[in-house]
Length: 151
Image (tube, rainbow, N blue to C red; front, side, top):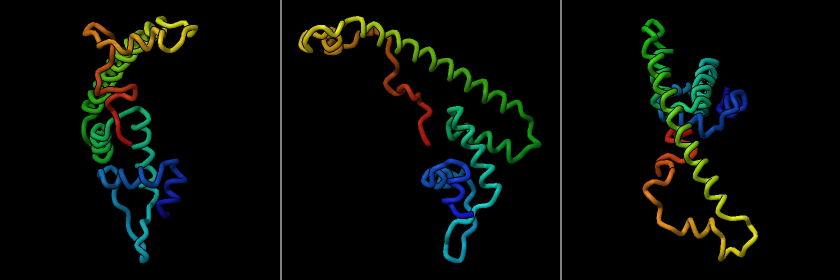
Protein backbone atom coordinates (compact mmCIF):
# COMPACT_ATOMS: atom_id res chain seq x y z
CA UNK A 1 0.00 0.00 0.00
CA UNK A 2 1.14 3.57 -0.63
CA UNK A 3 1.66 6.10 2.14
CA UNK A 4 -1.76 7.70 1.63
CA UNK A 5 -3.49 4.37 2.11
CA UNK A 6 -1.42 3.65 5.23
CA UNK A 7 -2.36 7.08 6.56
CA UNK A 8 -6.06 6.45 5.87
CA UNK A 9 -5.97 2.97 7.45
CA UNK A 10 -4.26 4.14 10.62
CA UNK A 11 -5.65 7.65 10.99
CA UNK A 12 -2.11 9.01 10.93
CA UNK A 13 -0.99 12.01 8.90
CA UNK A 14 1.38 11.35 5.98
CA UNK A 15 3.92 13.80 7.42
CA UNK A 16 3.82 12.03 10.77
CA UNK A 17 4.50 8.69 9.08
CA UNK A 18 7.51 10.21 7.34
CA UNK A 19 8.64 11.73 10.64
CA UNK A 20 8.47 8.32 12.37
CA UNK A 21 10.54 6.89 9.51
CA UNK A 22 13.17 9.63 9.89
CA UNK A 23 13.26 9.00 13.65
CA UNK A 24 13.83 5.29 13.05
CA UNK A 25 10.59 4.20 14.74
CA UNK A 26 9.04 2.94 11.53
CA UNK A 27 11.26 0.95 9.16
CA UNK A 28 11.75 2.39 5.74
CA UNK A 29 9.45 0.62 3.27
CA UNK A 30 10.30 -0.91 -0.05
CA UNK A 31 10.04 1.34 -3.10
CA UNK A 32 8.07 0.81 -6.29
CA UNK A 33 9.63 1.19 -9.72
CA UNK A 34 8.17 4.71 -9.66
CA UNK A 35 9.94 5.32 -6.32
CA UNK A 36 6.71 5.31 -4.28
CA UNK A 37 6.92 3.99 -0.73
CA UNK A 38 5.23 0.59 -0.51
CA UNK A 39 4.04 -0.33 2.97
CA UNK A 40 2.95 -3.74 4.20
CA UNK A 41 0.80 -5.00 7.07
CA UNK A 42 3.74 -4.97 9.56
CA UNK A 43 4.13 -1.22 8.94
CA UNK A 44 0.47 -0.64 9.80
CA UNK A 45 0.78 -2.79 12.93
CA UNK A 46 3.91 -0.98 14.07
CA UNK A 47 2.35 2.40 13.36
CA UNK A 48 -0.67 1.39 15.46
CA UNK A 49 1.69 0.43 18.29
CA UNK A 50 3.46 3.81 18.03
CA UNK A 51 0.16 5.71 17.93
CA UNK A 52 -1.09 3.83 20.99
CA UNK A 53 2.09 4.83 22.85
CA UNK A 54 1.69 8.44 21.73
CA UNK A 55 -1.94 8.41 22.93
CA UNK A 56 -0.46 7.56 26.34
CA UNK A 57 1.82 10.61 25.98
CA UNK A 58 5.01 8.60 25.75
CA UNK A 59 8.15 10.21 24.41
CA UNK A 60 9.87 8.97 21.28
CA UNK A 61 12.69 7.60 23.44
CA UNK A 62 10.19 5.65 25.56
CA UNK A 63 8.59 4.33 22.39
CA UNK A 64 12.01 3.31 21.02
CA UNK A 65 12.65 1.34 24.19
CA UNK A 66 9.25 -0.36 24.04
CA UNK A 67 9.71 -1.17 20.37
CA UNK A 68 13.07 -2.75 21.17
CA UNK A 69 11.35 -5.07 23.65
CA UNK A 70 8.53 -5.70 21.21
CA UNK A 71 11.02 -6.57 18.45
CA UNK A 72 13.12 -8.79 20.73
CA UNK A 73 10.44 -10.63 22.71
CA UNK A 74 12.76 -13.02 24.54
CA UNK A 75 14.05 -10.22 26.81
CA UNK A 76 12.73 -10.05 30.37
CA UNK A 77 9.93 -7.50 30.65
CA UNK A 78 10.96 -5.99 34.01
CA UNK A 79 12.42 -2.97 32.21
CA UNK A 80 9.09 -2.44 30.47
CA UNK A 81 7.40 -2.34 33.88
CA UNK A 82 10.02 0.14 35.07
CA UNK A 83 9.46 2.36 32.06
CA UNK A 84 5.71 2.43 32.74
CA UNK A 85 6.32 3.10 36.45
CA UNK A 86 8.57 6.04 35.54
CA UNK A 87 5.97 7.33 33.10
CA UNK A 88 3.26 7.09 35.78
CA UNK A 89 5.45 9.13 38.14
CA UNK A 90 5.90 11.72 35.39
CA UNK A 91 2.12 11.87 34.84
CA UNK A 92 1.53 12.27 38.59
CA UNK A 93 4.01 15.17 38.68
CA UNK A 94 2.26 16.83 35.73
CA UNK A 95 -1.11 16.42 37.44
CA UNK A 96 0.30 18.24 40.48
CA UNK A 97 1.60 21.02 38.22
CA UNK A 98 -1.74 21.29 36.46
CA UNK A 99 -3.64 21.43 39.77
CA UNK A 100 -1.36 24.27 40.92
CA UNK A 101 -1.93 26.01 37.60
CA UNK A 102 -5.70 25.58 37.96
CA UNK A 103 -5.61 27.04 41.48
CA UNK A 104 -3.54 30.03 40.30
CA UNK A 105 -5.97 30.68 37.44
CA UNK A 106 -9.00 30.34 39.72
CA UNK A 107 -7.46 32.83 42.16
CA UNK A 108 -6.70 35.17 39.27
CA UNK A 109 -10.28 34.92 38.05
CA UNK A 110 -11.55 36.02 41.49
CA UNK A 111 -9.78 39.36 41.01
CA UNK A 112 -12.35 40.67 38.52
CA UNK A 113 -16.15 40.61 38.36
CA UNK A 114 -16.22 41.80 34.76
CA UNK A 115 -18.23 44.89 35.73
CA UNK A 116 -15.45 47.49 35.37
CA UNK A 117 -13.56 48.93 32.42
CA UNK A 118 -10.44 47.08 31.37
CA UNK A 119 -8.32 49.85 32.91
CA UNK A 120 -9.66 48.75 36.31
CA UNK A 121 -9.63 45.01 35.67
CA UNK A 122 -8.14 43.15 38.62
CA UNK A 123 -6.92 40.34 36.39
CA UNK A 124 -4.99 42.70 34.11
CA UNK A 125 -3.60 44.57 37.13
CA UNK A 126 -2.42 41.33 38.72
CA UNK A 127 -0.83 40.12 35.47
CA UNK A 128 1.08 43.41 35.24
CA UNK A 129 2.78 42.66 38.61
CA UNK A 130 6.08 40.79 38.81
CA UNK A 131 5.64 37.07 39.42
CA UNK A 132 6.16 36.27 43.10
CA UNK A 133 8.44 33.38 43.94
CA UNK A 134 5.63 31.84 45.99
CA UNK A 135 3.14 31.91 43.12
CA UNK A 136 1.86 28.52 42.05
CA UNK A 137 2.99 28.26 38.47
CA UNK A 138 4.15 25.52 36.14
CA UNK A 139 7.74 25.45 35.05
CA UNK A 140 8.18 27.57 31.95
CA UNK A 141 9.46 24.56 30.02
CA UNK A 142 6.35 22.48 30.65
CA UNK A 143 3.16 23.93 29.30
CA UNK A 144 -0.20 22.24 29.74
CA UNK A 145 0.82 19.72 27.07
CA UNK A 146 3.78 18.78 29.23
CA UNK A 147 7.37 18.11 28.28
CA UNK A 148 6.33 15.12 26.15
CA UNK A 149 6.17 17.15 22.99
CA UNK A 150 6.61 15.69 19.54
CA UNK A 151 4.36 14.08 17.02
